[in-house]
Amino acid sequence: MRTLYLLRHAKSDWGDPGLDDFDRPLAPRGRRAAPAVAQWMNANGCAPDFVLCSAARRAVETWALVSEVLESAPETETTEDLYHASPAGLLGLAKALPDRHAAAMMIGHNPGFHVLADALAGEGPDDLLRLLAAGYPTAALAGIAFDAASWSAIGPGAGRLTCFVRPRALE
Image 1 (tube, rainbow, N blue to C red):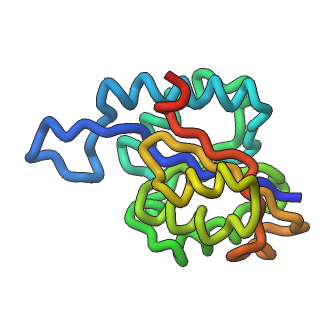
Image 2 (image 1 turned 30 degrees about the vertical axis):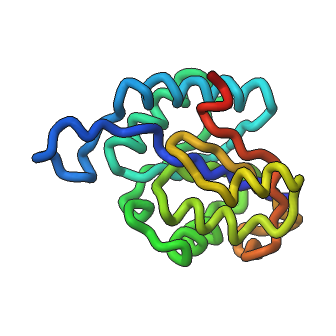
Image 3 (image 1 turned 45 degrees about the vertical axis):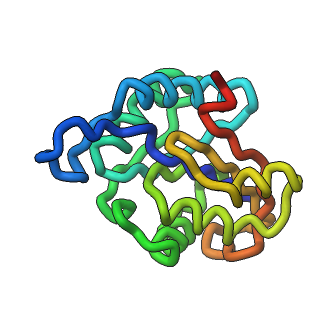
C-alpha cells in the first residue's frame, strides 16, 4: 500500500511585480493556511515519511510552516524538478519515489497538481471527487492511496482519493 499526498503551496505574495515567479514568498494568508493544514494532517493521521518539495520559495516556505506543526519529521528532499512540471513529469517523479517510504508528500504547483490528482484518483467518495474536480486552491491537500507494492506501479485511475482538504474549510 502506498499513499501519495499532494500539497499545493500556500498563497503567495504578488506585491513585488519585479520579483521572479520562482522567488515569490508566501502572503499572510498563506502563512496562516499552511499550519492549519498541518494541524488537520495531525488530527487525521496523514503523516508522510518522505517529502519531495519544489525548490520555489513559496513551496519551501509552505513546507517550513507545515513541518513545524507536523508530529512526524519525514525525510525531505528539495528539487527544482517540481517547478513548472507537467502532469506527466509529476507522475514520473511520483513513480520514482523511494520504495522504502510508504507515505510520501509532494509539495508543488498548479496546474500540474490538479491534473495529476484528478488523473490518479480513479475512485473515492463522491463528495471528495466533486471537490477535487471543482478546483485545487492554494494549500489544498489531496491524499491518494494505491494498492501497490512499489511507487513505480502507480498510475492514472489506480488510486483512491482518501482526503481532499482546502484551507477555507478549516477556517
